[in-house]
Amino acid sequence: KAGVTQTPRYLIKTRGQQVTLSCSPISGHRSVSWYQQTPGQGLQFLFEYFSETQRNKGNFPGRFSGRQFSNSRSEMNVSTLELGDSALYLCASKWGAGRYEQYFGPGTRLTVT
Amino acid sequence: AQKVTQAQTEISVVEKEDVTLDCVYETRDTTYYLFWYKQPPSGELVFLIRRNSFDEQNEISGRYSWNFQKSTSSFNFTITASQVVDSAVYFCALSEAGESGGSNYKLTFGKGTLLTVNP
Image 1 (cartoon, rainbow over the protein chains, first blue to last red):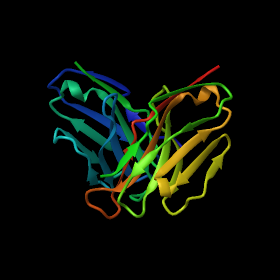
Image 2 (tube, each protein chain N blue to C red):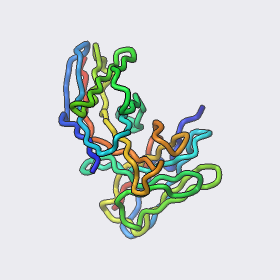
Image 3 (cartoon, one colour):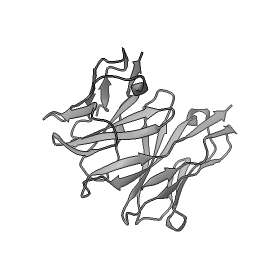
Image 4 (cartoon, chains in turn red, cyan):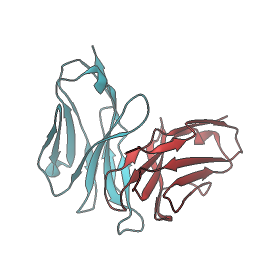
């Protein structure tokens, strides 16, 4: 079974621009979560989608948004990029909405200049 | 608030040594799950184990073992006879109910422990 895939793997953007990251979950998994990883803050939860609905949201500004499609694929968008948004963005999928183990993708390394 | 503390920021050992990574958590939930993940230099988090709060039995998987002690709110991870390939950052995580409660669970991660196994 293929793992979680994320595209693109690396991205360089300029402050003020917007960016869209994509995540394809493991086949059969209906829950997708997004995390931001930085050296200073560590791994922080952004949001979770299940059956195209946002189920939970972390403590991030409204510039961070996401969505999930009927095939469970998910995208996250960051508008008006700031230097502090430079991070590794990880997507994770799990079978259901409960406390199942999450399987992570390789991440998208976003650099904002 | 839910919290996970991994007090050891970095550990360095020589191959074949045993090493224990500590994890202490705080939660008000009566039912919760604990996880360990490994993040090698490639960056992808690899799931290692999930343990629920009602199961305090220790778990062993090959060279890996986990010690869950509810009384001390700890979920420690031991690697026996460490190998160079074990070098990675290891994260302990706790599942908590999200803001909406119900089945909205999110992971709260510790800061991670960087394990370096030298040949």
